[in-house]
Amino acid sequence: MELDEGSVGDLVALGLARYEARVYLALVARESYTAAEVARAADVPRQRVYDVLDALVRRRLASTSPGRVATFSAVTPELALTRLMAVQRESLERLERVSEGLAAALQPIWSDGRTRTDPLDYIDVLRDPKAIAERFAGIQRQARRELLSFCRPPLLASAEDAEGIKNAEGIKAVRRLRRAGGTVRAVYTTGALADAAVLANVRSFAAAGEEARFAAELPLKLIIADGSLVLCDMPDPVAGAASSTTLYIEHPALGGCLRLAFQTVWESAATADEAGVLPDAGPAPG
Image 1 (cartoon, rainbow, N blue to C red):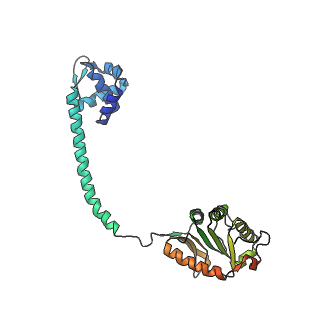
Image 2: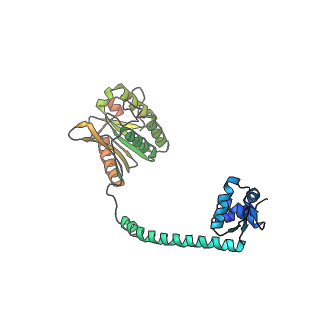
Image 3: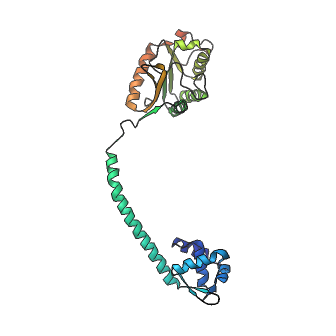
């Protein structure tokens, strides 16, 4: 027989399994069925129908009549739906009690949590080279107005850049920022320019639009995006450059202070023309 799938869905919503809903609707259509008959009528696998009928009987939605071959009958739809609704109401009341108890337990914890903050929740300490490279690339992608950097060997780079040269992600960031009217400035150590790969890297970035200047010494490796995102390498004061920790900081006040420090170094650093660094690439953009 064809069953109304809408009625099947409604019974499922009231808590029946789909096979239970189909068998109950088939039972409603006749005074009684054997298990085999109702399996065919409800289009339920024969090997499953006995479990389904047992479940309906336990729920008091069907009754069974013993005999040479047992038969099954549905209780009236009104009574069946009343019993299903009673189960749903009991379940809802239980969930309401659980919800009230859980809310009472969690509310003080939530309120207490609003009054506490982690004093370092804006700082990430990075030691894994891959994580440092990913965060470095991320800062370049996030920059919208300004990108400032101190570049001293070994330069921050992607994991693929074995020689420590800034990657293609940086070139893309420079071009994007300059097209948008932004500022990209870098101060390099003059000693690093003796490395031909570093010199080629400087010229590539200058061609993309980076403004470069050159200083004999830099206090640390640093990149600042939009005056608020900072990635800096903190050398161990005892072990020196051989051991360092990289900090990622999201803090406008600190970013602003470091930006002022960058500007101080920038003003006293040599220009590309003064350093004679870019004869092959032309003058750096002004």
